[in-house]
Amino acid sequence: MELMKESGALTPHLAGVTVGILIGLGVYTFGYANGASYLTADPAACTNCHVMRPQFEGWLKASHRAAAVCDDCHSPPNVVQKYLNKAVNGFNHSLAFTTGRYPDDILITERNHRVANAACMKCHLEITTPILAPRHDASETRCTSCHRDVGHAH
Image (cartoon, rainbow, N blue to C red):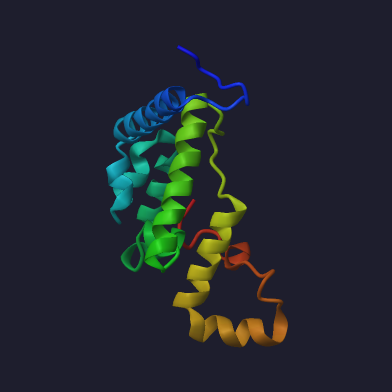
């Protein structure tokens, strides 16, 4: 059986096997990591990986516990963007854990920081608008620069 064509392209058989292996690995990883729990809004899903336990425990002590769950601050409000964000984060998390390349003290990514900051601004629009308009460039202002412990008390 020929695996490569003269042009260097994969044969349909090898391409199918490759796609099948990738799908199989994805399904296995999704199941092993309890991926379905991340499709819900349950904050306990964040504790599926041990490095997130301090963030979850911090949220339990934080002032926003009564008002917001993880998705409220860490997912975009648009349903398509929300699940796209969850898919990107899920892929990155599974890659990090599969390869063992993750810090014990987990840090928020720049993209996720923008999502969280936008959530602050949206929920607290009546407060943020008068503050940001005259004093700050809103694109550079981060609510968590001053209010770091609001979502996750440390």
